[in-house]
Amino acid sequence: DIAYHKTKGNPLFLKRLMISLSKDGLLRFSLSRRRWVWDEEKIQSRKIPDDVATFLTSAIFKLSPDVQNALCTLSCFGAATDEAVIDVLETDLGVNLKNALEYAVSEGFLEKVDRNYQFSHDRVQEAAYNMLGFEHRAEMHLKYGIALCLRTAKNDNDDSLLFTAVNQINRGNLSEISDSNHRSMIASLNLQAGKKAMSMSDFGLALSFFEYGSSFLCKNHWNDDYDLSLELFDCSAKCAYAIGDHVRLGEISKQVLSGARSFGDKLNVLYHS
Image (cartoon, rainbow, N blue to C red; front, side):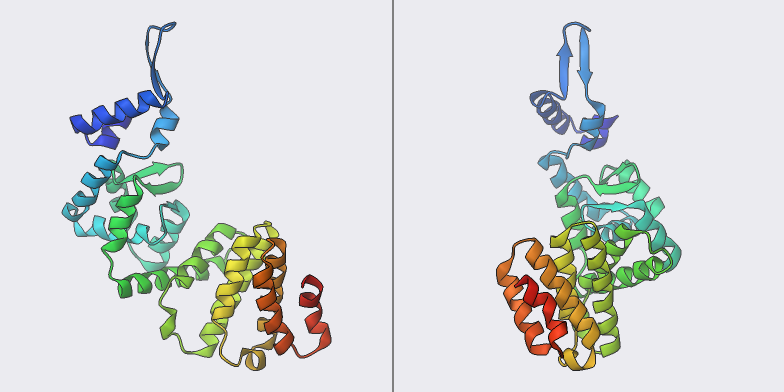
């Protein structure tokens, strides 16, 4: 069943898969047991061969519109997506995804591992994502990010959902967001996500959130949004110091030293510089 699922029953693809599994020791003949033995779990999680990926990529365009749309939605979240994200999109945006995704699983475009939907090959994910135009893609990222952020406001304990939500917003078309209140809100969400990442000692991820947050501050942010600005740059300095990025630390320090209103507000960057 696993071999058929991964090769769609194509004899050439099946032969290549069997050879590959045998070379990697996942399929072998046991002399003591006098039969073929295999590691089902590792075979299940194994990526499909490139030839099959090419076949599936071209086959996407033959799927029904609802399945294509579901794959496009999933592709916005990368190679794999937790089912919890799908649940939020279905409930809060009123879209029907699971039936279409389950069909895509049965056809080999996706794998269902525990509560994760994952593309059977990165080229399949890339093909689904490229079906979306650039503007439409950005709109979807922003739409999904906002929906997930609204849900995280009700469940502050779900760190992974917060990270997914803020990542989606950051990938949206934010150049059109000119309202300073909206930009401050996005900066605050990145600050929240960055603090969560810091608490998990993932300082590289945290720094990326803080830098995204800083990029959404308005031009006169040291005057109009002082507290948020100071906290974003202070946290950025701590993370840059933690990962040993002294060049970035120097850049952050210059901005704080020129924008901070008091000596006390400059102490953090002075300490880490």
